[in-house]
Amino acid sequence: MRRPTIFQRTGRRAGVVGEHGSVGGDDGIALVTVVFTMAVVTALALTALFLVVGSTPRARAAQDSSAALAAAQAGIDEYVSRLTVDDGYWTKGGQDASNAALSTPDGLTAAPGRLLPGTTTGARYKYALLNSSADIAASGVIQLKVVGTAVQPSGQRTTRTLIASLKVKGFLSYIYFSDVEARDPSLWGPTSWVTSNGRWSVERDGSYFGFRATAATLGALCSRYTWQGRQSTTYKAGQYATDVIDLSNGAKVGTLPDWDGDAGAVIGQVCPTTNDIQFTSGDLVKGPLHSNDLLKLGGHPTFGDPDTTVWSGSYPATGPLFWGGGSPSSGTPSQPGYAPRASSTDTKLPLGNGDLLRYVRPKVDEDPNTDRRGCLYRGATRFTFTGSTMRVDSPNSYDAAPGCLVPGSPDAALQIPPVIYVKGTSGSCTGVGYPAPGEDVSRGITTDYNPCNGTAFVSGSVGGAVTLSAEADVVVVGDTTYADGGQGTNVLGLVAKNYVWVYHPLDSNRNELPGYTPVHQIQAGILSLQHSFLVQNYNEGHSLSTGGDDTKLNILGALAQRYRGPVGTGSGTSASTGYLKNYVYDKRFAGLQPPYFIKPVATPWQVSSVVDAPAGS
Image 1 (cartoon, rainbow, N blue to C red):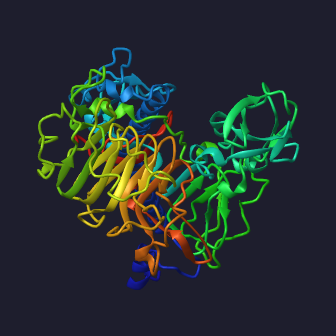
Image 2: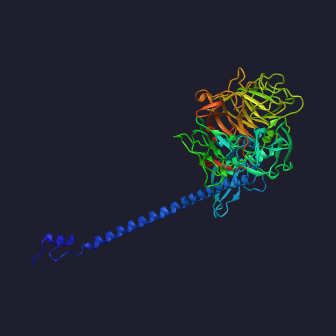
Image 3: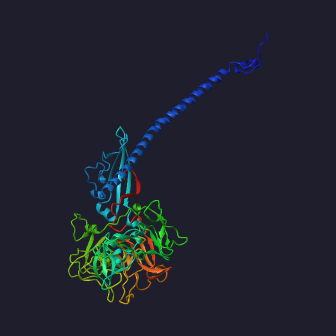
């Protein structure tokens, strides 16, 4: 019998393929493959399980962080809603037993706060004011810190902290704001004649009588907007008071319809278009502008900001953008657009500035506020600013507070306070050099210089932050600028209950007084509450803009007024009298304002910025 060779035996043991196919060695390889595959699958399953188990706390942490952030944001919204209901809610500070969310800064991390409605994570919020009521009144900004908390069933807490700045969008949001684009009716005087049956006068028994709108009629009709038909106002006698004037002597002889002449006559033309003031060629307005009225363009002014808007009585607009025959200059950066009156800065001009009395000394009001950082003066008062100090001439301030006045020493240097109020007085009053010798105030349009009036005269270089407010008028008698050029924190507010005037004195020949230096620079936030910002005798004398922009009336700041105030006359690119305009918005007013500057009536607080603060801050 033949024995197998060694190669044949070895081949069978090794599973070598012979002529009859493979032999039993393949079963071992299959087993190894199965075991290896199971190991890999198990490893992958364990890895997946580890990842799932490991991500669960992170997912829960992210969920809790989002819930805490939502709670903090809800706290901001809820506080703003309280301010909407009660504009002075911020004066409560951290004191309101009915509000579980209101706290002091030290109590923000203590439970429980207010539960966020609609949540199942136990999310709550608490908030506190970071600045005092006095600082809020001065700065116009509320700093609100809100802590949102999410609480797990185990009691573990996750917090998020937001710090919000709240402001009122007000008069300092625009380089130019006006309510009515017409000259103040109180400046029209006896020239406001009206017609009767198409005639300026009627004859009776050989005498001629004219008709003149009363001050009340002017105020009612000429305060209307262009889009309400101000220029073509007509009414029947008896609807509004109209004086009947004897043209032979100017005496008033009756009031329609009491006078039995034309009691049923149709009277109109009370508000002629000549009293509407226009923007013209050479006028530059660089910044946001809004009027609740249509703008009159008599030339080609330049508007330098896309936020140049008007209100036409309907929205979307159905009427013109402007009127008067002019148009914005070619290539101007923006064209006037429409904005609803309600969003015109959300402004409603208050009727007075007496609220500022609560911040000045000596105390003359009934307000319990004791944080009185400002100064009160009486009667005509002259202020000359020089850096951080001022010189004050106020001969009628018999009770001035220490640090506010050195009696008998108008040249004494005093530190500029954050707020100044000039109040009227009575009795025998002394002036402060105005009107100047030779100044004719018997005619023309100018300041009422009665020294008992609460009138402030101002000029100089301001090296601080101050709001100067007058019960009557503010008169800018010289260039009034910032010591830092408007590049730092120097800010000035000029607030008048009546007029803000630019000084322009004339003599009896209607020429400028000898030695008079025109005002060309005003750097301030300017606010005329009941009347206008305008130039004295703007329609008489000579042109005060004689060359480049430096001879125009340059304003760096913001200007708001109830009626459009005129600053000059002319056509084309030149002024016949008064000034051309160069108004530039002070962009710092977006975050910085003069102290205690007056804000609009019933204007909602808005969130100007929100910062996500680090934990524990």
